[in-house]
Image 1 (cartoon, rainbow, N blue to C red):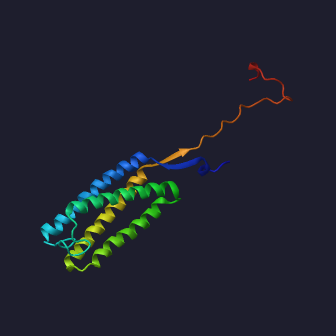
Image 2: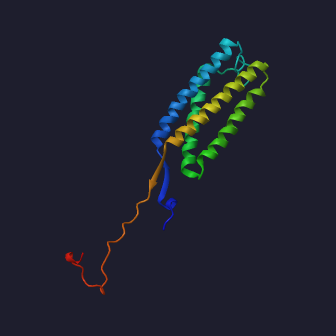
Image 3: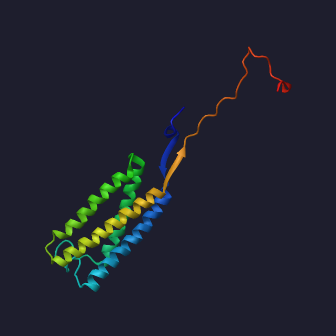
Length: 171
């Protein structure tokens, strides 16, 4: 008897995955805006440093939100590629997202700005990384498809020549 797994093929519903990716991009942009509003408005921290103070110095709230949305779309593309190419896409996606998020958290801590700006930016990046990873993982899990391979139909039973012909009345 054939193994059940031999008759199953896994795939991904690209439409659902990308719809979820676009929705995740909107969520990520909003998370970035909320994080910056909390840091700047409530705590008075100049997140991303004042203008002219390094690589992060001229970033605005809009730019930060657009970059967060773009990263969510890149994460969707990565998950789509992994879903088509590797045996355990969720595992690889999780590791990649953990490492990318770790880079995004550590990078602001290396800037030459006040400590409060470093920490606030690192926290916002951590939350963004976690949100994007969690939502894309969930979206991918919900967009997986299972297709069963078509099995050839068994041939109709035939009567052997050494048997007498059956009739309707033999029963």
